Image 1 (cartoon, rainbow, N blue to C red):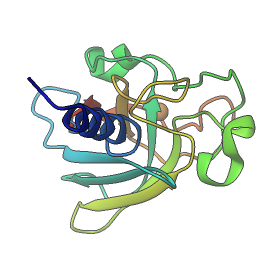
Image 2 (cartoon, protein in one colour):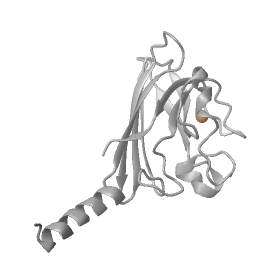
Image 3 (cartoon, helix red, strand yellow):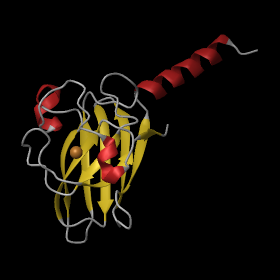
Length: 171
Ligand SMILES: [Cu+2]
């Protein structure tokens, strides 16, 4: 039989794990047959927001739009991921500076890819989470676009979807 303090400790750890320590990832792959695009998104719930670290490789140099989309599938050249993750039904923007009232919750802007075909993006986004609620990104798809997000309406004119991966909670 467990002592009360052991049960309390176990419950506390579970609570901390659920609220602050959740981690997730998405394995990004090319959306068309033979595409060399690869990448990884690593997500961590922290007290200051969801830390998102994304790296990609084998991508054409330049800025590429990077968003969380509503769907949880990557088929049909990425179209299966649906529209942007936009639980508030607001205009398109850049979440880190525009916030939830002027940007979609999935508006991560662009990832800058260098001449060697690799790029990385690190953002900490207050309000986003892996642990439930309106802004829970778990189960949604990370989409890497063919072109630059110019922040025009309705979705930034970023063209086709060259990379995609669905976010899963790992811990
Ligand atoms: Cu997008």
